Amino acid sequence: MKTNKITQAIGALAILGMSVPAVAADQTGWFIGGSGGRAHATIAEKEIIADLLAAGFETTDFSTDRKDFGYKLFAGYQFNPKFAIEAGYFDLGTFDYTATTDPSGSKFGTLSFSGWNLDFVGTMPLTERAALIGRFGVHEGKTNTNFVGTGAVNVLTPHYQSKDFDFKIGVGYQYQISDSWTFRLEAERFRMDDAVGNAGDIDLFSMGVIYRFGARKHAPVAAPAPAPAPTPAPAPPVAATEQYCSALEMQFEIGQDSVERVNREHIQVLATFMTTYPTTKAIIQGHTDNVGTIEDNQALSEQRAQRVVDFLIREHRIAASRLSAVGYGETRPTASNSTVEGQQANRRINAVIDCANDMAGLSTLPARTTLAMALEFDANSATVDAKYHHQLENVAKYLHANPDLIVTLEGHTDNANPAMAQAISEQRAQNVADYLVNHFRVDRSRLNVEGFGATRRDTYNITASHRQDNRRVNIILGYPK
Image (cartoon, rainbow, N blue to C red; front, side, top):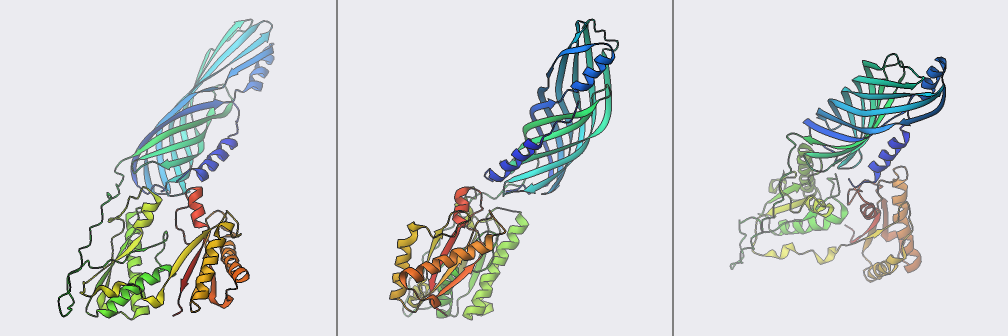
């Protein structure tokens, strides 16, 4: 046997990992699995021909069957999301060759290879469900080699067998189908001894599945509890004590806990209500989607709720004694986490406040109108698409009609080019500002331009359309403070 390169297979698997829609598995514990596919060996043709020539035979024809079905069965333990150990049994099949000689005769040989292996497996997440894996291990392989001679070729020892320890390596791609099941594609190389003095390799290209024991199940999606209607106002108005009178709905970008500019108007509504009714209290509730570990999501939900509390105290002078922050992690979804839209809906803040009889405070103040729109861009492009020209004209008209308004242009991008992300996000926002100035004579001093690179995602960059959603400029209009 001789080495047979698997570079093309490694490259193909890497490309597949980058392009297949993809939560990297966060389970730990025991798992079992199996896979099967094509095994390929390179017959040591030159060595065999040289051996026949040394015995007085010239080889006139040499044919081989280098492929067979191979499989492996294994069990393992996942120590953390990036490291596991696997042990199992493999059978790589049988390979053969036929050498036709002069003087007239032939030599027929077969080789079969099986054994036990122990591998260390590393995982590199690509997306929330997809990951590349790499393995390095050792195996105890058993090789059976048989020879048959015809005509002038006489085989003195028709059977050889060897058992030896050697190493193996591999790369692969895996996709988490569910909490318990994971699909794998792999390319592996087994170093082996063919029992007659030739060392070489057998490659196995396989697909299979693994089953994880005790994988945690995400909490079932629960419908949100309807909010009771506010208590009708008696005369004179008196603040009531019943809760769930108002809910503040505020969504977050992926992995973020900061209060974005576009959400500050919603908080202003809550602040107005609490200022109007100084005896009311509010519980700020933080929630997440189910991406990531339970512990991380719990911490993130608490951070989000606390950020809103801090913002109300700092910016709106609401007494800290009237506010409390609670995080529920991923335990209270309002939509299905199986879709990107559902995940986005679950990354939210709710505010539960005491009821008051006069609900006027829940209307946005007329002097603080905030509008928002998003312009999408092609990959690595900062050109303002013509389809947005009419909308930008409407924005300009609105600005001319409301001379006290200011505009913030927030540029964003996907994760396709980290080196250019910040620059291209700033350029996108700047190009929108230039368009408003050059085409509609908007005063540049009213335009604030900011770039955030790929740090603020609306979606998980899974598909082309999701990446398109993240390549955007948000236009936020509001009055200066």
